Length: 294
Image (cartoon, rainbow, N blue to C red; front, top):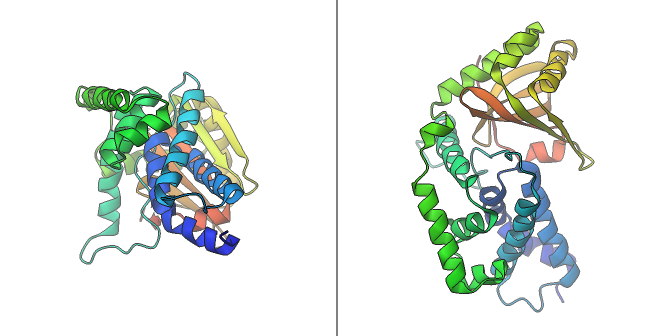
């Protein structure tokens, strides 16, 4: 039986792929961490002795957890994640500008995520796992409790629906400069305590999610509630700098020179629809944060 340290090392080797799968399936930073952690807990409980292909087993486990999360979501539109997190430990290719690469990933990732949000949970899982991660249909059928042919049909239906979506109708911003203008407008309104200006850049149905160090997640719904909390910015004595957070537009706050919070946004039709706030230093340490000049 694998010792715990050895099992943990093997799991960590597959973590980047598991996170990528979970992000495309869920589009929520907090749920991604939950899905990957659940896969580790199940592996830790059962060990790897009976598992012939550990990577395939882990992908199936994350997919099943993600499918349950997708099915349990409320009717409200869930928050999309603008782009995949970079694989941990990888280096930027020489000659490429990390900031420009992040902006490009932000645009492409958000466009895909908006389209994925139009699919049913089964269609989404079949399309993502097969077309984006090359999972064969027999494995998809096992995950979905369907036959391989049924899984093939789900992926095909998802593919057709994706091709038929007009992104323009969803108001997706493809220009990173436009997104940063929205961020600057929000930060200026928060700094000045301008409630009306805050409401002007917040979607009426915005969801703000704050992940704390103890694992809890606080959700605040609606522009009025989020704007009221934002007005506290000016009284907290924080230094705020616009930033790219794992390819998403947002900002980073500093207290006494140390990173205090990191915020990643989803912006659609020039309004902030989702705000992910990370206060946990451990999670912050795993984020790729590129501060931007004002």
